[in-house]
Length: 229
Image 1 (cartoon, one colour):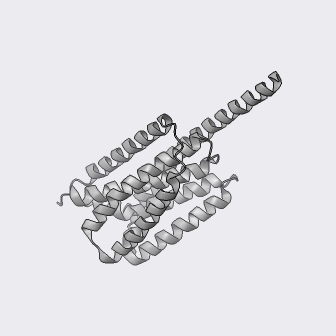
Image 2 (spheres, rainbow, N blue to C red):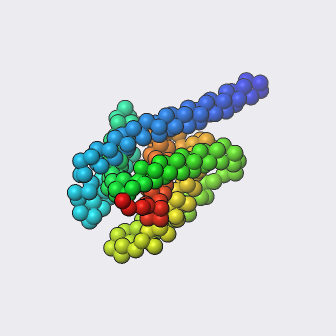
Image 3 (cartoon, rainbow, N blue to C red):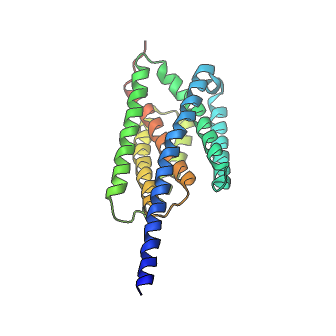
């Protein structure tokens, strides 16, 4: 009987250790992923490669590249090539972000707006990470609603690409911040609860949420708080 209890305790302890390891690896890889993202954005702004593409071509390249990379990450997440593929994806995402970053940098207070967006994204991440440690209830039911919200947001965003409404863009950006902030909480909680055991998959989910939060904050600050030279 005592051996059964001991084995049960050992299994539980190992499970906790595994969760902590996945969470730790997720945080490390997430931090590392910021390097190619910043590098990609810098190269994009310097060379103007993203700005040189027409908005339509840029949208097609972004969607094709993003979904292509995510498919590749899913296929390689359990192999040694998983991390390099993920980092390649974050470089691509930084490159595609350079169009917006370059536009904001064109404002007289552009650098400060980018720092505000970065600080705001960091604050949201810290808040959601803290909440994921405090909240004890199961949040798995959130996934379905967040996924539906994301699909609706994507459709509305593509529609606004043709409508070009600034008011709608700000509205969608505010909604995106809410949805993807909740996604950060949801994804981190899944790791803490042992529902997600692959740190590459976990990193991808949190990275995409942080990317969208930053992009949305940058859009809002750029339109609402930007000042021209």
